[in-house]
Length: 629
Image (cartoon, rainbow, N blue to C red; front, side, top):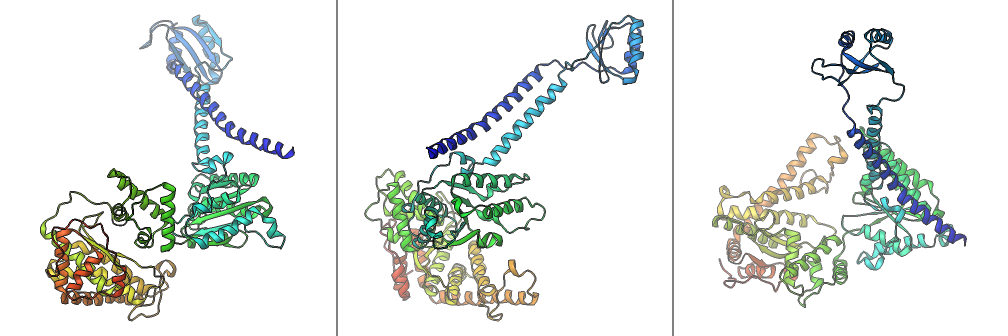
């Protein structure tokens, strides 16, 4: 009985909270609108006449009647036309309050009737001000409610529903899900942990790259535990209005304490960044302080769990990460190949996407390294769109390839025009990337080479990176060699004076890798085991060491470029052979590229043979691929 009464009381409070605010806002706005309409319906105020002119006309008998208004104003009506004013028109005079007696005496001599107004003025000045204030207040209340409520579930906390997600909606991330299952037990049955003296965590921090499913996992925790789910973004809590962020945090935790459940704060770094980073505006610091106070203020018996998600754990304030606040930190990384396959199967099943027999999701997962669950969901959607565009009932492998190329390489540019010399330069450039990758970078399998314009590129040699965690010096040097292959091929075939601007992005990438080797990985030829980070070290490193590191970066790139150029020069026939095949067919699959190289005496590394994927969806060939240029 008591529990039923409490539920009804809670429901009534929720309903009341839901309609009182909008009703008050509607009343204020209605009053403001009516006031403005009344204000606009009033006649314009009478013109003002100077005090000296008024006295002269009063002595002449040109004033029909007068009304003295307390506060220093006289209103009157002309008895005849005066200046530009017609007879019977009204006028106003502002007079010194201590000179009203002479006015009355002159009016009596002129025979002009005088009256005294005791009520409020009839021109509506005061009421106009009230109407204006009501309108301004209405706008402010409307803006404040929008700011406090926002567009998230925080603004709908009075009607917060239980999450419908569960761990069945999460594919892959087995280790992360295992940790979160324990968190669910904390929320669902905290007494079992307190019985053995364990303190249940107040907060859980999930960190990792974007698109890895942190929000979905937080919803799954609330759904598995069967408790309400309150979600808000860190950027919604911060703002320039003083006290607004603090009010939002208080409202969020007040509702969560009353109902119990999971508070999810996305983009926690926007709210919980290091304090003092913005000296000119410390409202964000006040908001963070309020969050810290709220997390310290509720007891474990209130059944509230705070889950934060961020892509930048290093940017968080240290006070957030101490025990008693975000007690647990759970890394949510990019999925492995097997986890990517599970994610793909989940999206295909949930969306009901019919797959043709030639679609191998395991193979597709291997071809999508270093991608998040959001990327894979987008891939499935793009493949389905490609199938629908052709009005077919199944998604084939060529649809998947189209979707993959669109996501990784950009949209195909139809109608692109270039000269024959430019197309040959592009073919030589991409053939150089492919040959350099096969010769110097066996770890990444060659997937395809194309001179089909996509995005901002006129062509691409597409490699599939491996699942390596540690990168050796040889691997990093291979990355640089592969990136320099395009420029080196241009120089070998056309000469140093005819190289093109197509290597701009390649040079930026190779310089970035070489700089990483020298500045952060201790792989500089002369500087050795020194690590330096501009963001952390400030001015702690001498200019001499800076110059030495820059020389090492340049030395690495230049020495590797000479190595690549000489290797391509020795294999000029293979380079021309692949370029001619590209000019003929636009796109060559990885296995066929290796066959061309093999025909010219280049034996690819076994890793390339194992990882090159021969797609059955090849473009129509006008002639077979030849082994010679």
